Length: 228
Image (cartoon, rainbow, N blue to C red; front, side, top):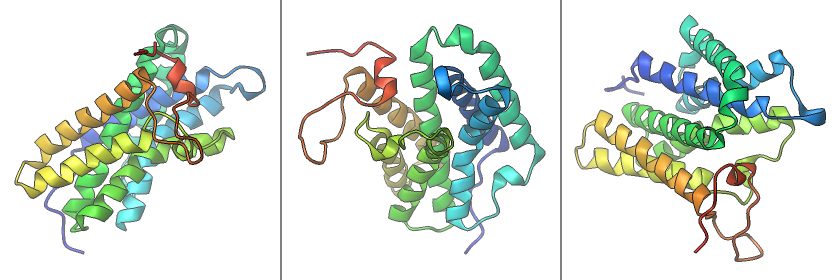
């Protein structure tokens, strides 16, 4: 495998980890009843959201996980989780923020995963696959740890589709000579916009047995749905 022509800036990777940590802690803080978590549980969920995508990305590429090569990743994820816990009572009242943060985190990890895969010489289609896995990885680990149905496997709000759209754009744009940075930024925005609009308009892919839309993902109730 050749040396990469592009590497993810540390500040950008840490930004994704931090946003993921905040979003994960806010998500975990909202549980009540038997599923409620203590401070350690919320911290673990926040750290898994923040670091999970990067871990899966680097494992698929065949590189040592960047999140384990520096002290700053775990420090950032843990600190962000603490911030998410402290602000959860205030920010959970604005449920839209959780959905928007989730969409941005998906876009960032998808863009970073695809760009890094391409930089290591991985072909376009596998690079998109790696980007989608990186985007969905944190959420999958969260759901497994929480004993929840894995969101990406069920009818919902175009979780993986949004990531795939952004990652595919990055591959095509770089193929036409667009700079890596610009392609990644546009890919992040595209993923986030598709994700948020899918939640707003309650759009999902056709169900395996019934070709109609239905609201099953918990986050679809977080912001008003626009009915035609």
